[in-house]
Image (tube, rainbow, N blue to C red; front, side, top):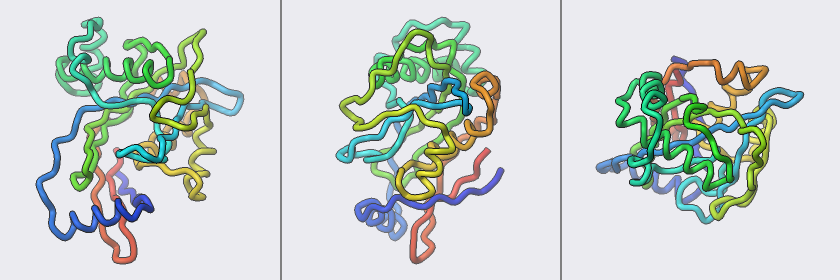
Length: 232
């Protein structure tokens, strides 16, 4: 697995918290289960993905570009899903069906709440599994899924948690990230890089990546902090 190094967010508060953890590591919070979805559609220039920018007042990932998603709620464990679909997804995720079901339900629910799209659970393709590093004050055990843009539907736009949304070509948002005009967490960057490698949505959704859990490690290089990850 290739070792990747990501620049830490340029936030005084984040850096202070991170350095305090490195100086005296405490007991990490148990991460909350979460789901996020790359909703994709074809364009003349390749697959595009729907992204949102979180408002600057958010406690987690403020002002960052993200895919629609969020934490698993109690109601997600009670959602009625097709058992065969759940078993198939659980097999791909290498988890028990009882663990996969709430994550699938949360993915569908969050996408509808945040951008008005009604996805089919059967269309969700597991893409990755990332766990927030232990030093963070809010931690998530997040599964990334991909799904095709539903026919005849439109994304509603900004939500109460976001101030901008767009359909973007991965390479363009990655360029903005490299230039410093777009802020993203490591898994978002990696997901965009992976999507950019495919010519069509069909090819992307047919791909079955390795789903090893990734949790970036905080490293102090003296003049700066970075997060290192082994990427499957």
